[in-house]
Image: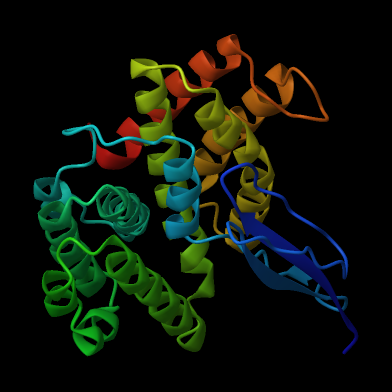
Length: 277
């Protein structure tokens, strides 16, 4: 079978998020981490494996841009028992993953542990219990209280284990749904922080999400053979219209004030559908 690959380099830096296609490799500075991912296109099936960044990567980008901590804006762990369908469980696993990353990045260790327990509950409902049970995550978190670097590594390890588990069990498509929940929650947090105090760097990070959104929509569409996620796709396409319709410049792709406000309202509505608030 003939295959061709597209390399996507995700550069995490204080200044920018860049996607590079082709074989070009970017030089890194001390403040950049370059993660090169491979998308394999199989010509016979016309299937594309869309590689999406982890919630932790996006949280790190937003934190560097000034995503400060605001209490009581994340999804309450107490809501976990309300999610009884696989649709809700997958999306809210993503939401809680983003909330955990947000707390870790802002040294809220107890809240991080609470969200880990919440993720453990959802993992049981999603038949992913092996991930949590084999990693001793709660003990590792408690042993690293106050050490943001170690906590960040622990969450990165969790993400890697989850990705491997989904792939090995033929559930790779679930990853894009989980990521959708995490992505929406991160944008929600970003727009809420920006509402409190306008932050041009944060708006820049929000604007750059247009690139990720296009891949996310395509990934969900590709696997949604039974139209289970038709409403979610429609909502995401509405966000995409905001990104493409209001950008002040195609070159810089910076959302203007009106677009940021519109995006914030759309994200708030979509997020409420997911978390039930």
